[in-house]
Length: 333
Ligand code: TRP
Figure (cartoon, rainbow, N blue to C red):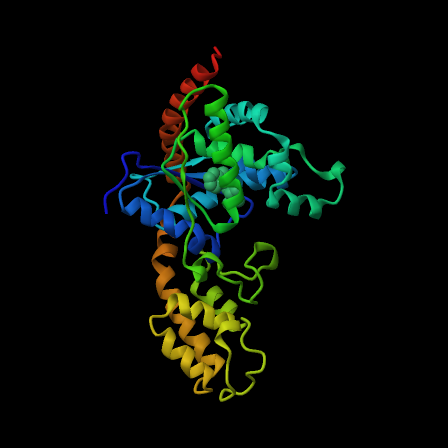
């Protein structure tokens, strides 16, 4: 497969939690690693300012989380020699471009955004709704366009933000009669079972439900979580028939076990019990993620400091060039 001339890829995750879970990995991070290994030039950002839209009262926690998230990127296979790993707030151009974009982005685009509508509803009153929340996709657009990337690999929940981003790019070019920005590709996993890996209770995987396996969980923590996972409720004895489509353990087997088809068949026919499914799942998951956990355990704080400083420097080089082009197109000093 030949690579495009522009090989730059930008992506990021908010540092609202110190630990990424398997949903983050399957939905996005795993694609970053694949793209890196195919030879793309990756910029892997930790979005700490975005985390502040909901955690403005806990900035120290966000700062702590940001380093932990960077460790998870590296543990998952992002190689800091090849890819730039950096924290958003270390590259001030993100704030500058966000401000310029905020002047030219129609409010309607932001008010219509489904992720904004959901958050707004959760908050209830405008008195509790920070100004920055509405601008969330504008900041994300600045994150992306600063790197003038070929594509942006994200989980499917991010699609509305990516669309606003390309709309802002088009608006900028037409307002200032320039071609500073080229539309970027949305790189969203097509495989449904990866894109929407359910939680261990079959609800949406979410930190707030505590129903996910973290990349950095130990073998024992993983085993404990899988032992209490949701299975077919009507499968009480081991020879009762199961319904793998609705069973969290079977969903995970499909993703991680090479023998999942046999396992599903036997589950359906009542030829195996949930305990056996769980035992086999614990084995395959621990085996798959053990190398990542070991890599994570070896990272020390000094090394993370160096990686993030170097990543920010590489990011800044591209971001500064984009800002020169932006200001020149707008005729600003
Ligand atoms: N909104 C993304 C998320 O919640 C994080 C993010 C911030 C991002 N800036 C980005 C993702 C730029 C891709 C590109 O996960």
